[in-house]
Length: 253
Length: 192
Image 1: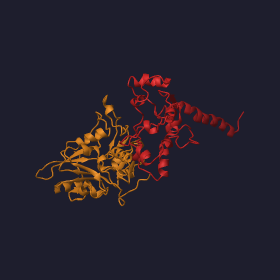
Image 2: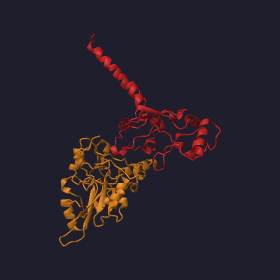
Image 3: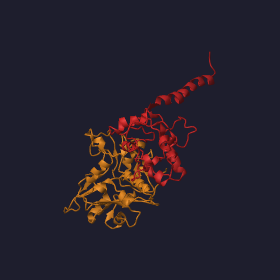
Image 4: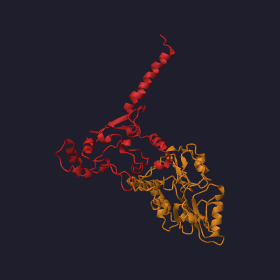
């Protein structure tokens, strides 16, 4: 199973997330829903902003203009690049680009914990497990059986809730269908967002909401000049926000 | 007396191999008894299909083992045999589920949906589970002391020589079939 670059041949499905920055209030519900869905343990008491495990980080970008204006909150999950630098550097092939979905999959049991991928990722969306995962007594019963718990010493990140894609595929098979019902595959963050700032879908379908939104003039990608080809798009009606975030990325909040 | 080199080599090698291939597997696996002496054959001869008790749920997942309630649909009262008496006394009357030891249970990081294999792929149950439906008593359940996994994942033979298609459920066994059919997939199709 080779991982190849797919900047020229795009996958049959292109699962894509569009983040409407005008709507995001920075509430953090996406990150909470993500942690619950993906069995991310409560932070160790020694964890810092750099060493904690977070798959969906919400950063704060400074006010959009010199005259003030609202702060922009920027939710940053794995950007699901079409040309992912993490895949190239992994000595274990513990990261795999799925050419049928465009999802960059992390396989923690193969990871040896060298953290080269964390260095390679320009978006800082990867976390290393510095501590064994621990839940307060009784909370183990709330774990999601569809996601395995990662051990200490491995890197993990957002997989676009691929377990929900697996479940949607199984459901389609049981119903005798070849393709999944798009309504069955929605990541936890998108489902949870109270201000409907997150859109998710298959951009290979030209008529889908994400295909239309990601192509209009208000959408951009973080650090697009690097050529990583993220499938997470950001959009804002404010040209200053667009200009600053697409060019410089985001400061750590 | 000094033995010729090949002989002294063999004197070391043979016991080492014997220990590795004969003794170690015995130490590695612990045998556990199933809670009830379930007779698959009697049920199959009574005209029941595998899916009458082991169904695929509507959402495509395996509904797994039948509930005690479904057993009680036929076996609500004692009397027919010792096993049925045990079922009724220990599980039906107290309303407990039978703690079956599942030979085919995969490790925690494996996602195996039955629907794509059974409904879409039209594979027979016996293709992976073997002639389980013809058994009159449950096979001994052997568990790997180190990993906690069922011996069925590796298969009965340590060398895997002469292995039948349904013996063994290692990742390589899954991949073998997937590759043969051109159904090669991504890691996260089957892993979680």
